[in-house]
Length: 455
Image 1 (cartoon, rainbow, N blue to C red):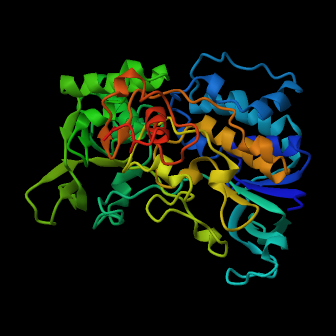
Image 2 (image 1 turned 45 degrees about the horizontal axis):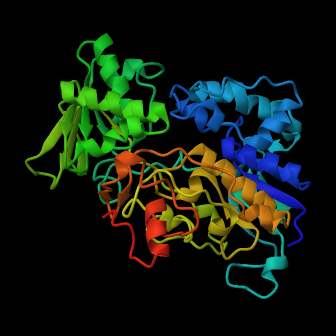
Image 3 (image 1 turned 90 degrees about the horizontal axis):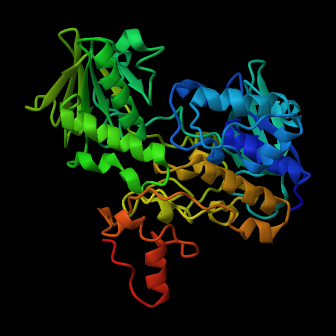
């Protein structure tokens, strides 16, 4: 490929990092951001403290670009909130560096194809530029690019409440009592949740963080009752690696949550797969099983924190290679499939694992993880460093690994926690073998054994 112009979709942390790396490589670029400002999705959860310190949240190419403006880098060991990430990093990067002239805000991408080629036409396809259509409030716009990096994320396509991947019956009708993701229950949305019974569905970091905030709100506002709706049977799986987690704040989050659950401040409803939602007595009836089944929970509000899924609707004319279950690129999916393992210390990866059957097109950042929940921002930075190198023709740099991820202290294989998890997730992530869940598993396979026996 003779890449001259790269279109980047999304001006979040990974999108702006991609822009910095592409610019360093001497290519032209344009960044299309659906929101009115860079970091639009993060502005929806700016009250949340990250569990990774600043040293892991600043991309190296972006830092080099910011250094030329006299930017003062934050304390690498401190933990920013989403708002501090915007103020201290994303806003300066988007407004004080050369990227400011390359970002088009309020520009929502609606479709991508190849100029003169529909999805079925092959011969000469790889030589045709991409055609990107977007809306900016002034009518439809079109631009062309030699390559596309989609870092549009998943924040605005949350999973529904239904335990089968579909909206629960009645979910849309009860939309006024339902929020998704991680609302600011102690801040901007305080009046909505104070003094109420609030059910939170999910078992990931968003659900855990929201339940912790609701427990704190209950200390401040009598009558507030958090209820944890857990699809699984074992609440302890949400507690994380504790002291074994190399990201201390992430370990502390799980430890704090475990203490609140043990104290009874958070009511737990395990094995609760939501199927029906309905208005009842001025509140919400949340049912598991048939509509008239015996098991239900009454609440004033429901927060659905069941993760996210990628929106690929505007990519329907491109030849994507996505895993049918996880909806991640097929080479990446085995590393992050929560049905198999959830180390959280996925081997750093780049252009090779993120490639599709459409030369010059890549997904990166949270969107590249599809429905998997283990993404870290620093992983996205490594992805786009590799992609930019690949587009520039530097195959050696594209294949090189320039990131070491902190271990979680929890490692599962085949859905079962590994016996060696407490010693540091089986030696850390695998370095070469795509299907290996950890270093010990990789070593065992190289020695001719089936694996390390995590399961």
